[in-house]
Every structure is written in C-alpha cells, then in structure tokens.
Image (cartoon, rainbow, N blue to C red):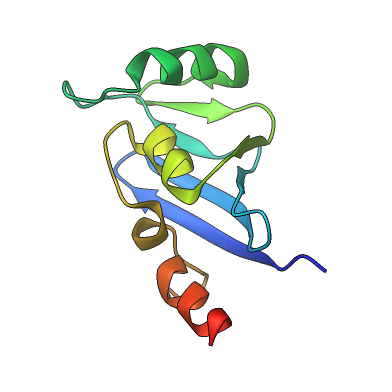
Length: 110
C-alpha cells in the first residue's frame, strides 16, 4: 500500500502543494500551485523547464500557475521545476507541520 505524504514548497513567488509517494519516490505538484518565473542563469534544466511550463502552466505577472497536476520522478526534480534553480528537494519540500520531507522519510525507514 502506497504512503502518500502531503507536502508544500514556499518561497518568493512560489506556493506549491504536492503529494509524495513513498513507494515510487514520485512527487506530484497539484493544479493551482504557483511556481517561480525567474530562473537562475546557471540552471541546467531550463530548456526542459520551459517546455513543461508551456505544456502545464499559465502565466501571471510574477509567476506561473499549474493548470493540471504534474508528476515528477523525484522530489528534487519537482523542486527544481518550481524554483528554477538547483536544490535538494527532500530538504525544501515540507509537511504542514513544517517538517522536512527528508526527516519524514528517515522516520518512516526506521
């Protein structure tokens, strides 16, 4: 039975809600989530991110909004897409109790 963990990612012009599946390690960012428009100049996945934005998002003044749920292979891939720069997803995604996904996963494995 899969374990789904509700997580969120917040920052400047970013407000994402997601569901992490602990069996598959996939993270789904839910429709209506807001992602950052600005991208780091050193971000190596920018071309892929722009293609995903074109497919899944609508543009707002300072951000993009997801029009449908999007599944990512890892929490890091989802966080990089949302923020537009390199990050460690399990550290950035947090539960409603502000606990890092990384810490939740360590507790589950025990």
